[in-house]
Picture 1: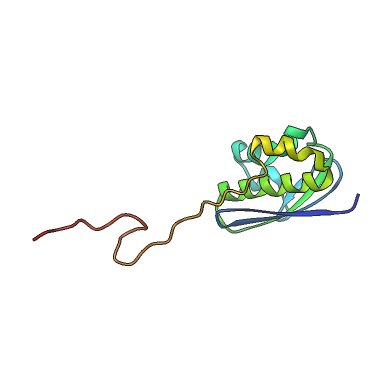
Picture 2: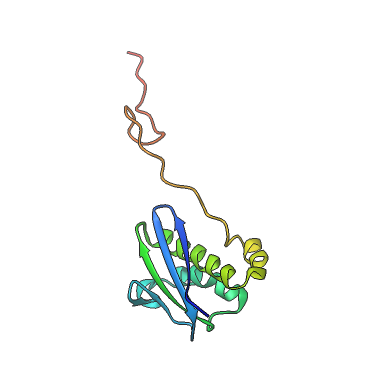
Length: 128
């Protein structure tokens, strides 16, 4: 199997995934998964597509993560891994889509508007 690459985005985080057959090692920015994501919840989010297909120890995954916070990066990585798995075996798409792993969450931070303290909050109105 040749190297398969996929891209995942969430908020301002971008995950580029390069997947080969291997023993199940995940390397993120030249660090191990449990070093990069010390939280077990974030590791669980990243492993969800692999666990759904039972492919935790089938592929070695090298990841370049950039931008965003920990949660956004974990969810961007989940999307990228799911997309790479579908490139390997297109029949898996239905199972991953049913769990919501194939959907790009397009929500981003709304910009601040002029004359307001935040995006939607307004300064208190004073009649006099």
